[in-house]
Image: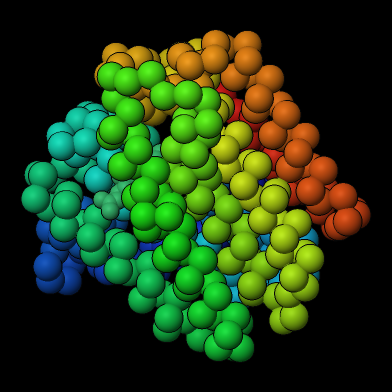
Length: 296
Ligand code: GRG
């Protein structure tokens, strides 16, 4: 099966699952539920759920075990986009080709929708009956997502991002910011799937962690490149927004050519990390290449 076919299949599966788990908009509080559904079901590439499914497939994990982790990471991602777009943060009007959540609803509703989505992710992980039964593994999954979302992950990276506006950080600081803000959730997607296996081998977790960290950083570098080279219609968000806001990006700090090289190096490092996994990891290797070649 080609990577494109897999992406399509997993995208369809996660759309249906998310739809079934999000609170319905005809139940109270209707407006809040409508905003939550708008934020999550409004498109998106579904890269993080796909990584959960692909990693699980590589390890022979039953797909039903992966639905809740895949949904939880996408829900956290959706909440982060809602909050990131708010006037107090990036103040964006366009996301996934439509008005941002606070534009479609209002600011207070968007804040609350983000908060409720964050909680919903952990409600799913703590209550889903199809996930791995072993409580140690389940706790590891919950912890993986919690750490990746908090100050040692996404929120911490966002704090550096806010600090960095109008400054000129060095490459190491920029890589830390990118790895935390974006890489941590991508890495967590891979590791949550690894913890869904019956007996995850520590060496395997280590290898997948190296893979996840490399593609996580590569993903944000490619995002920075697309902010320069992409167009608003294809991206579904405002192209050039980072430079307009005087935000340091990989290309603004090291130049476009070096940014491309670094993304390619990280793709190679990710593929290298999977050397012990043989044929079963072919789709994950293809995914690493997709992440640095994508055009939106
Ligand atoms: C308020 C505690 C607190 C946390 C919020 C706002 C925030 C923390 C973090 C923002 C993190 C963020 C928005 C990172 C950008 C990551 C990124 C590259 C987003 C775009 O991801 P894609 O390309 O988007 O996967 P789609 O739309 O395809 O899902």
